[in-house]
Amino acid sequence: MRRQTELERRLRSVRALGEAISAMKSLSAHHLREARAALAPAHAYRAGVEAAVQRTGASLPAGAGPAALLVVGGELGLCGGYHRDLVAEATARRAALGPGPTYVVGRRAQAILRRAGVEAARSYPAPTSPRGLVKLLLSLAQDALTDYVRDDHASLDVVAARFEGVGAFTAVSTRLLPFMGSGAPATPPRYVSAEHLRRVAVREALYITLHGVLLDALAAEHGARLVATQAAEDWLQRRRQTLERGLGAARREASTQEVIEIVAGARARAR
Image (cartoon, rainbow, N blue to C red; front, side):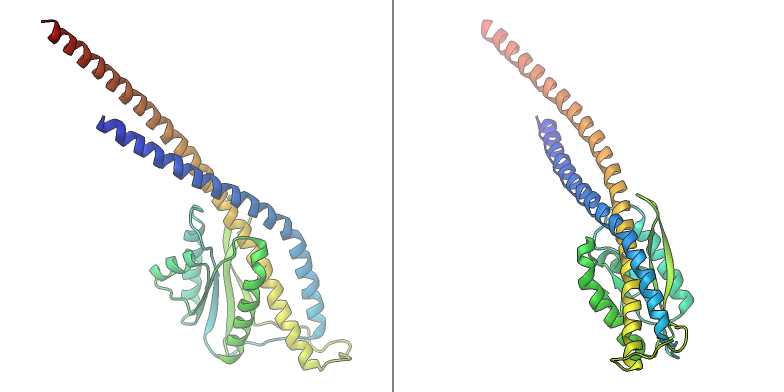
């Protein structure tokens, strides 16, 4: 009876865990579809903005201060080696850049980086869907530009995952700043000063570049989680079948034991 009770408890736990994994898998599949659908238009828009910004002659040169690094991770786990690969690339890049501020998107990435000896100067919650990117982008782009100018940063690099298919990604490092334009604009601006136009152009270029990086990373994260949750579901299915077989055997043993005790009691009374 004790073994039967324990098996029933384990089976309930496995079923509850399976429901949670299934819900996470469904959400990841939904968000992955959204992110993939937004990737192509975002890349096309980024190319157009970058071409327009180049024509303004906007630039933001390198400073003499430390190099900044932005690491784009996620809030949640259960995504295989996603964060492991990101942290490996980020720690290698941080070592190559030398001392400097590190900005981290995602609490899970921040915790793993801390264990690797990299502390975050600024941290941001990671969005779980493309619709959550806008709020993050506004603060992230503003903080990055403000710190870059105020602290005279030599550069700003970003380490993020590049989406290459469901469950396939590569952790890559990309240089965001300094930004060098093509020189003076062909036509002077009519309604604003040239300096104001350059500042706005640099901010827009950084914003749209970060948008593409974050969207790519979001698709890669959900793709990795989709593969991991599918593997977890398969394991839980096998585990549930094993427990159900064990529970069936325990119930048969209990029934057999009960019959034996009834027969033994009847024989004792007959004597």
